[in-house]
Image (tube, one colour):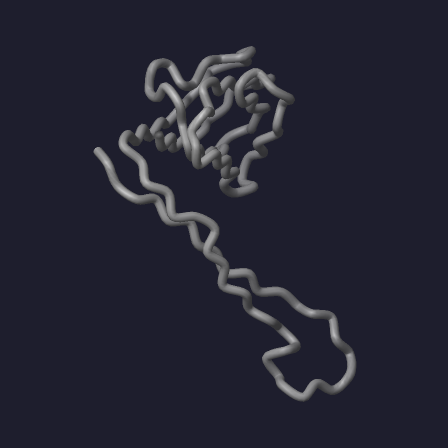
Length: 126
């Protein structure tokens, strides 16, 4: 299934001003960000459940050969993710989505390591 993946975000924060501002909206600015419009030809959605610890578990498992976009989140326990055998990147339970993008493709290996039972949602676009 081919399509276009669009990633947008809205960022709102307390600017920390204590004085009087000319515009009330300056107190709590809102930024609308467009991060990505990426065309893909294949999509894989994985719901991974591990009953115990795993080490360098291959989560591509033939789902993609050269991913452009990968989204990962943990719904239980968390773990460490490695892309193309690189440095371990922590994916914490309840911390939201972790997004990796390489518009040219080239994400060819994804592995997970956990120290206990864990659940992950993974979306792979290539």
